[in-house]
Length: 261
Image (cartoon, rainbow, N blue to C red; front, side, top):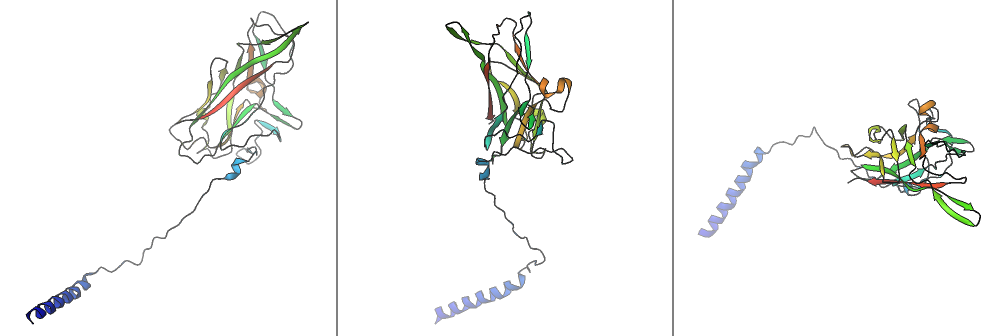
């Protein structure tokens, strides 16, 4: 019986304890409520096959004619991060001149039946990444070369040592300036040779969001005149010590887009 009394007393004290504690509970604030929200994004798989050229507009919404006149149909490569197009450089028909001076030739605009465009390189970066830094370089990887036939003999001859001067370099983009490739990352001029790759774009600034979208790196403007014209923006110089033969010369310039770490 004695044990039973002690147990009953313990239960009673516990019950009293609860009764005393209840009035001390703070009333909940039901005038404020934080609601959740969510959204999901997936990679745009359309970029895997998209070959659409970016449409460039002026600040007033009209078509930007600085580097393109008409509708260019030249195909471009799809890309998530890469080079989509490089216009071929055509220096046209020229007479062989040997006058003791270096020979200078200017690249013509890229021309189609119903369109004209300044020579350019089109790059794209739509990666889902925290770092959109990159560099773009150029190098002559095959000098201008032709096959010379002299009777029974046939021989390849090159214009080795020739240089390309790209100048009036600018950039056009299809995204907002805040995330676009900054103009400060693009050299205004650069001499490209066989010796080594030359950096044209150095997008390694502290703002790693910049450099997105599609970007034309263009050489001059089609609607400019004089020294800023697109037809005075890519110069081929052949040294006075080189023999130039009659014929069709072909060469290659290799452009490389490299993601920065």
